[in-house]
Amino acid sequence: MKQKLIFTNLVGEAIDTLVGELGNPQVVVVADTNTAQFVLPILRNDSKAVADARFISIKSGDANKNLDELQTVWRELSAMEATRSTIVINLGGGVVSDLGGFAAATFKRGMRCINVPTTLLAAVDAAVGGKTGINFNGLKNQLGSFYEPDAAIISTIFFNTLPEQQILSGYAEMLKHGLLENPDTLAKLLKYSPVYPVFDSAALMPLLEANVLVKANIVDKDLTESGLRKALNLGHTIGHAFEAYSYEQKSPIAHGYAVAWGLVTELVLSDILLGFPSETLHQFADYVNKNYGAYPITCDDYPALIAAMRQDKKNTNPSDINFTLLEAVGKPRIDVVVSDDKIKAALDIYRDLMHLA
Ligand code: GLY
Image 1 (cartoon, rainbow, N blue to C red):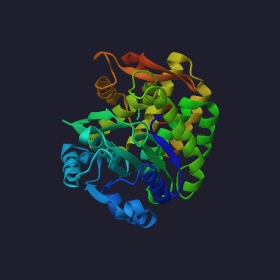
Image 2: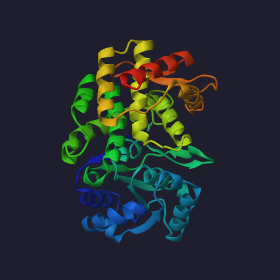
Image 3: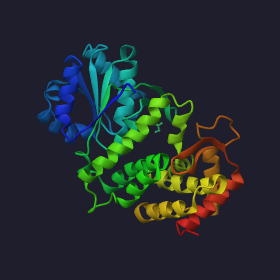
Image 4: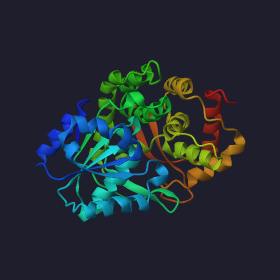
């Protein structure tokens, strides 16, 4: 893997060391309006490279992961006479690393880039693995590239001020990695409760480190998602449908919550179709129900949910709905086509497991 992964809470020092290793070129920090206000001042104190850096601000929120904000970054890079050896530091959540990473991938055909994720979700997902891009034409992540940054600096220092909902949202992706890895990793994750007042960001660090490496090892073998990386879509076919439907219904749910409920339903499918152990399914569903509650659906919602699954960009044939499922914890099976009837049966069981029926 090209991308160096650095796990430390001494973020400023790590940035200065990396910038030094890269020959102390010009540094540009890309941050959104939130991280610019709350995180950048701290890092300016802790890092000479950040204190001396130029700065580009983008609007926060997924709705601004668009061509307008991307053009702002390109324009400012141009005005600063940035070159290929300029280092872009993406300081923020997934919107910043996706958009800033894409700007770095395309400006002068590729600049150097360091991701400093400030949310748990970005630390376990967007900041690692080189997927960059923006939303376009009403569709998510329609324009982008696979472009690995030089490094990601993963820390937990920014998490203590995150709302609980954001911590849980990131933790859902950690649960997914646990399911893909092995029973021991999953058991450790199910023992930990990422909710206040129990949530302790320091205790999270060892779990986070092991977890990020699960993703890194997969990406290492298949950067461009031609095979194995599709395993990382576990929980996301149904999760994305829940998320899209919730937006349509004007009561949006957070991405990670949709993934948590998607994971439960896709484990049900795994149990029905591939013999995934029922005991683990029940244990997982109980954990999700306790920490995330349940996405309330009835059978009247099934047609719209299935229509949303059919639109998923992961489907290769427009009439098929394609899943990553598990034979057991740590044993993913990719490209499993599932019939509408089996999906409906899984949604029925999801409602039972979540005490909705
Ligand atoms: N978020 C899944 C991936 O990076 O492949």
